[in-house]
Image (tube, rainbow, N blue to C red; front, top):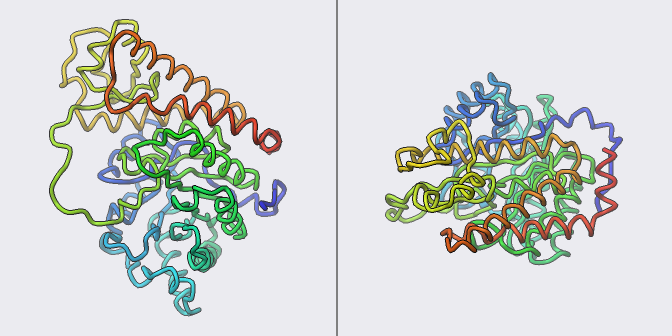
Length: 416
């Protein structure tokens, strides 16, 4: 069971900034800086998987100079995976099987603690994210390993005077069972953390389209939020519209689709070859809460439909609601910047409401409107590709179910 601690003496340590966080991924470091300069985002989560230690130290100072909080996710999710940190992080001595991590010697734990503290200071971090292995059903050694890793991180955080956050990466075998989810949360929240970073493995598909799967995630978020400590939804992607609705104070988002959920394939080397080729750009629409091919699908819409899907950002100024339309109006790389700005703007508005229930009502209204717009476009004989309308109604229904199941919890959250 989670213990509510709204009056905890550690409240002063809860320094996690509420709102939109840039979660660094493939070639996203410059994007994050560019967006911070335009006021989009309150923090950045650096990734050893995606940039060298030297670059992380440089970027951390740049982000901090623009008012952002900085965190480093050590990414021990698959500690023995074939694709580890880039040069300079020196974390390989600790990339061990969970069973060995669970039995680290006091000397090794102290060494890891000192290393995490050094990384945090060098990268201008405002806190420490404890390393964590993906939680799997029937693997108590993972729980034990994560407990040891958190203890090392907590010692590091205390030694340099910053909060320590518990990372909770929930694997697919856990999310299939409400009992396993409860056990995973109970184990994680037994730590004396200053907040929770929740990453969820939804399974196949770019975005979850199962109401029950999203409902289970939402219930977990609410349960963590009632601890009185802030929750940051890691690997949120477009699902970030639900983060404030489920009680999360913040959401971490990257443009890369393989960061839109906890995706272990990111940490496994792939064979060379393949790629997306010369695929057309996809334009993110806040009205659709999804994407459409630009210019083909966008141009095929009626004027009123285009006005409804049009989502102006500093990175889509070439996209207008009236013709002519051509591919040069939206360079492909700008679609990534546009998506982040549009999602960040919505997350900022929802977190500004200051109430999880109010955010849930607003997000449900947005998703119902998006589902209606998709239906209207389909009724006019136009079909948008890539199953971009497959999830909005399921997400809306999940909000409804979570609100009903956790009425007392939402009442409590309103008091925090």
